[in-house]
Length: 332
Image 1 (cartoon, rainbow, N blue to C red):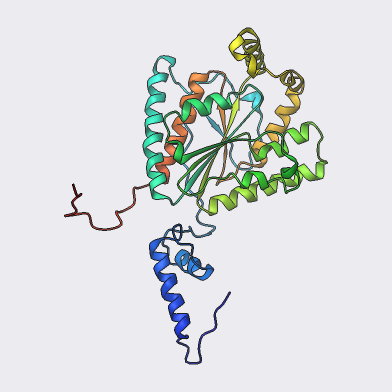
Image 2: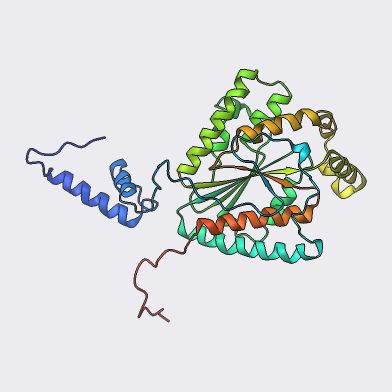
């Protein structure tokens, strides 16, 4: 709300007091003392770091994905059948363990800086067909990351409350705040994938959602969130082996869902809708990365290296101390 100035243009005493309070609040940080809307706006305009500018030129320059990953160029059609799910990007299995440990160490170090800087966020999206390895990838790649700075959300069948909202509502609630790494295990793409295969919404509805998803991701990007999207690509034969492994191992029986056998019958339909989603929603600011995922050891390193390289390109830095520390002594 605009505030009226006094006749002399200098403002009343109460206005000046409000300005002084807003200035003090901005300097102290609005997280500790929520400012007025006017104070918040002035802090953002002043570039104090409380909110990045919503500029169309703010799109991040993303580094290339790790060798072996196929990045979908904007406007490019996609044929998953032409991408080898056994590819390793030249990685040797004997070296994979050490390589993964090195990339996890990079992620851990950079995540600490991201959290401390509290300026940008990273959203990592995982999609795959059943048994594609989303859980295993997240567990292996983010091992050792401080849980204070990382949030993992798994999106399943929407609740009654979620169905009462627009389709993006539940996902927007879980996007990471500044300083955080957010992970979506399945995501807003379910609303152009499973709903299409199962005919849960009419074509005019799911077709419109591609553009809405792109707008949603653009909003997040312009608000300071870098988005990484991984599609874990496995073969139909590999899925069969993984389902059989769950049946053969009593420790994995809890993971077996008879519904997976029903979904497997729709393999070709899912390949078609994945092709469309990857093509329609790969943008310069949030491209899709197709990760060959038959070989878990190669998959983990490729994803970890891409996350580490992206964090490094974001260049998070520890903030300057709030005051000069020279001469300070800790009392006994």
